[in-house]
Image 1 (tube, rainbow, N blue to C red):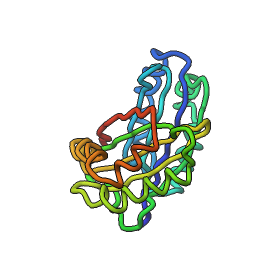
Image 2: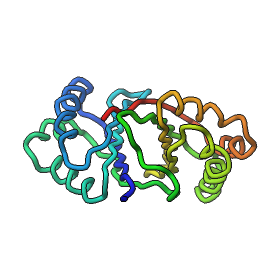
Image 3: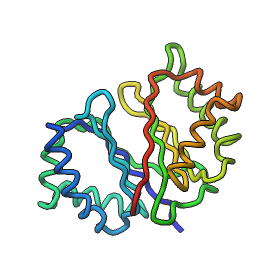
Image 4: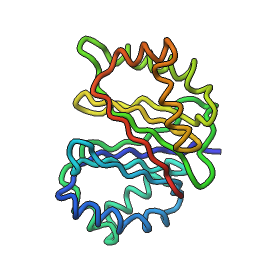
Length: 200
C-alpha cells in the first residue's frame, strides 16, 4: 500500500473576501478528484490574507494530477485568480515507515509554524525534533505521523497528524513534559500553533 502524500501550499490572497469565496467554491470539486483524502485550510493569525492549505492524497500520482487540474481547469480559475503570491508548494510523505496511513472520516492535525533562535542550525533543530518525536511523541495514543518541514525565508513547520483533533491537542501539550521535547522547544521561537480536523 502506498503512503499518503501531503501537499503543503503556503500563499497570500488578493483579498480575504475573494479568497474565502474561492476556497469554498472549489472544496467540493477538490473532494471529487481521484485520490483525495482530506483538506485542511488555514488562515494567518497576524494577516488574514496569509493562507496555507494542507491536502492529503492517496499517492504521488494523484497529487500531481490534482495540481495539474487546479492549474488548468476552468472550475478552479476563480481560486487561482485569488492567489496574490505563492510562497511555497511541496509534497511530503511520512518519514517513518511504521507510521499508519490516515484512515476514517476524520483526522486531527496540528500545524505549528516557527523560526529558529539565533545561532541554531537547521541540522541541530532537525536532530532535536527527530529525537523528541521518535523517542516520545510517536509513542502517544492516537499519534499517526509528524513532519519537520522547511520553507524559504527561515520559516519552519511542525506538522502532526493524529486520530482526532483532541489527540493532536493532547500530544502537542506534551512538548514541555519530556527532556527531549524541552530541548527542541529551547531551539525555536515565534511559534504559531493551529489545530484542526480534516473531514473527508
